[in-house]
Amino acid sequence: MTRSGYWIGWIALVTVSSAYLAAVLTTDATTGMKAMLLPGTTTAGHYQIELTCGSCHTPFGGVSNDACLRCHGDELTAADDSHPRSKFMDPRNASLVARLDARQCITCHREHAPEMTRPMGVTLPDDYCWTCHAEVGRERPSHAGMTFDSCASAGCHNYHDNTALYEDFLVAHANEPAVLARPRAPGRALRDALGAMGAAPAALPRLASDAPAHIAIDQSRVGALETTSHARAGVNCTACHVVPSGDEAGQWLDRPGERACDACHGAEVKGFFASRHGMRPASGLARMTPAAARLPMKKAAQERQLSCVSCHPAHDFDTRRAAVDACLGCHDDQHSRAYIGSPHHGLMTRTDADRAGVTCATCHLPRLTTRVNGADIVTVQHNPNANLRPNEKMARTACTYCHGLGFSLDALADRELIARNFRGTPVRHVAGIEMATKRTTERPN
Amino acid sequence: MSRLTASAALAAALLTAAACGRTTNAGTTADTASVTPQQMADALHAVMEADRTVYTRMVVNRLQNDEKVIKASEHWQDDKALPLPAQMFRMGAEMAAQKNANFSYALLSQWPVNTQNVPKTDAEKAGLEFVAGDAKKNYYAEEMLGGTKYFTAVYPDVAVAPACVNCHNSHKDSPRSDFKMGDVMGGVVVRIPIG
Image 1 (cartoon, rainbow over the protein chains, first blue to last red):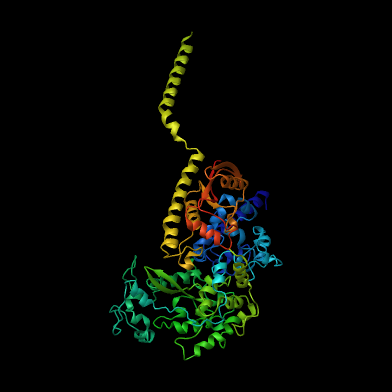
Image 2: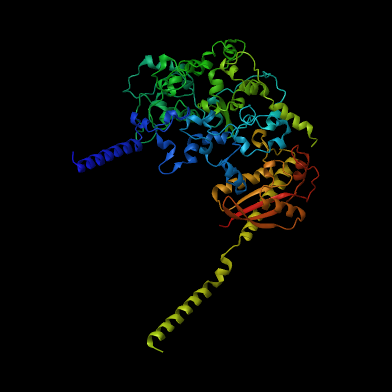
């Protein structure tokens, strides 16, 4: 070939390749080629959306805090963040910021760096607390001899969420028994709550379907709908199957999707889309399937697509069954396999107590009480991650409904006990309560 | 003188007159147009002090100590109690910081309940020492923090209600238990960036 031929050939090859790679990078299509451009294995929390670069990255702008707060902002607010950004924006803390820029999420939580990623996506060495809290030995003589990396890993302190661990809380719940006298998780009673707020739904006296005449109702799909809680709350066919507003208002949908649930169960739908079950459709991607999961999943469930009705099927909203069977239908890890036959599962067979039992949902889809317009509403947090890591978050949303705080913190710190799904008693003891109580007595003030 | 020089002189004279005229017209507004950092800090502190005094006297002291209908507590959400005056102050400071980054303020003390509120910078240390000695005088300084120059003002923070001294004297983390009404318990630090 001639010399100019080589030149033209090379330039053409480089141009075409660059254009192709640029196109792959800038479109949000989840092709195999785009995965090639990933600079490193992503974390367990983000791998599902790793191919939508725009979820985190601003073009030519790095990763802003807003990208993180879009999904994690609510959790941080609920956790009463102990290290909020506002603390480090104060100029008096400029010397601390110079050591560790805690104004940016990504200072401590870098993605695409699997070789230095610790639990919860932290990419700092385990002794990062010491960077700012070097005076702890002087201020708390009780901490003498503790190792530098034990601050956030001993079940005593967390960087963001200390709602179950602050001193006054430990002191207020000292000396509680392992099992409380009245172990109770909040009941849901959505209909009563709606009534207290003034939107009292009337039960359907007999299920007379209000579906449009041209819709042929397949009775095998509908089943005993009139026995469900929806019928008792006056929710008829059109409430879910007819699009309420927008361009397609009034249209009948055979498969309504999450929007149908949103009208009454907004908190649950929001939690679902924030969770690892629903974060993919929340980012515009195809639904999650167990086949794409990193956790061990049952072979039979590999191709099931996750949506609201995956766990509590349409027309048969048995949430009590969903609380165990739905989870174990897919999840196949050690903790899940150990559930059947565990002490918590054993409670479900008790006949002396009303609706007894500690299910997967009791701990992992916890019931939260919020006050809306003066009435207490109990909603179910459908984002299991919101109280999973660090697991002291579970103390207040699950454990302490039934167990004393000291026992709960000890159990949460015992990894082997958790893997056995709580067969046995905790062998580790978290000394936090004793240390906090001692401080109240040793100072006469 | 040549005609060119004369025209130039006339133009210069006219321009000077016009400029002088402009200065004279703007003279009255120029005198009051600029607010010094000290004036701004004093004004901000006047509002902060007034709001917190009202909250401490009319809300916390009245409802907790006089009427005894509700307590003030550090963990006011869990305890269904009133926020402490220092927390009300800090929440205001954080909210103001979100809106306008042109000033920041904090409540500090040489005898804080929370050791994070001890003076950290040299100006804070000198300022708190100064205002604790004389309850009527403020402390003004300039300091360099994180690459920015700040005008820093420290104002004495005085115990204005029995609620102040009762709580701080009996709190397990308070380094002092001998505060009296009217004592300087700490200082409000207002910072304004000046380039």
